[in-house]
Length: 171
Image (cartoon, rainbow, N blue to C red; front, side):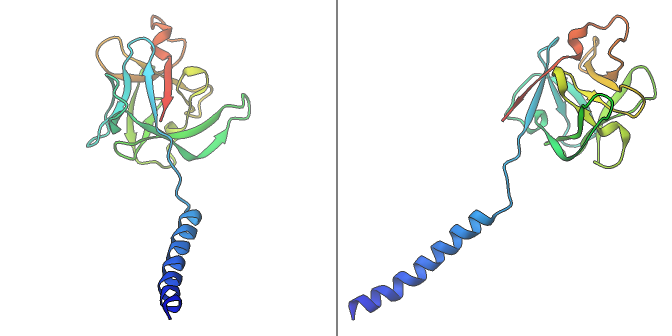
């Protein structure tokens, strides 16, 4: 009689454990890889706001969401040079790093991820290149006056080349 009682308790507990194990194994959740980008010239990191569309460079602290970015799932490969472009998404606000090609010194901000041409970035060669659909694209760099970041041509006169170098580290 004792073994039947034990069996009545053991079978439901075993089935519950099995169901939890199977559910965990079937989960589609995966860990997101977060990146922090530190500028070679300043030693400051690319930062985004939690309450606005602002992007700037500031001291590095990898534990803060404002300094963490992840690469979106959608991508494309540029046919003439093989570079892969994805959206770079801020952990702080869930929006994409964005720029435009309106001037020789283009502002950088975050905006909802979508079909904007200024949201496709590549991190090849320790540079963040935005393919804005107008040739080679614009490169992210720091500013000589303050904490601003811009997207400009790589050959912009008078800008130290180290301002265009971003060292990525992931967690």
